[in-house]
Length: 161
Image (cartoon, rainbow, N blue to C red; front, side, top):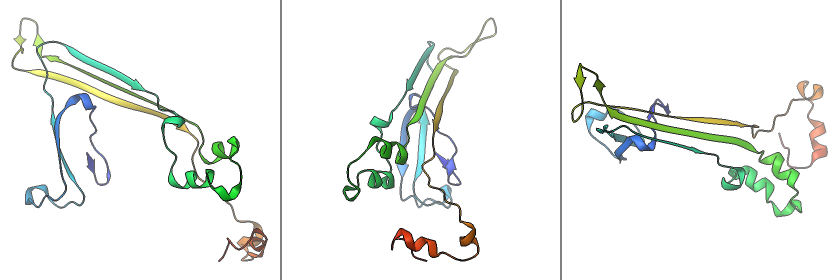
């Protein structure tokens, strides 16, 4: 789910019982929003202790590149595709995801037995992502800071001001 354009609540998928996406909800109780409204129903606990854990490690071979790096790498006008061009435009990344959920009944010895009545559930997930940024940065030369961009003419007609 999102709030003000950012992620507000994103439970692990093992905690979700059902969900509904409303794309054209005109009910005044939902307030003003654009796009979609997502309703989630969370699972309740059980009388037995349950849990799950998972991790994933997607690699560069399993993920497609973004549009512009893809176009730069496999442009037929630039000749053969060396591996350094792939690494430069689409650098390797390390992405590891962890997820876990635990649930059970609320039991306080000699005080309260919550089987069939009160349950607890705890879950979370983490994303560990490290990699180079996919951006090209340029710094204007001293002549360009003075307003002289004539050296760009030597690079061809791609650069126009």
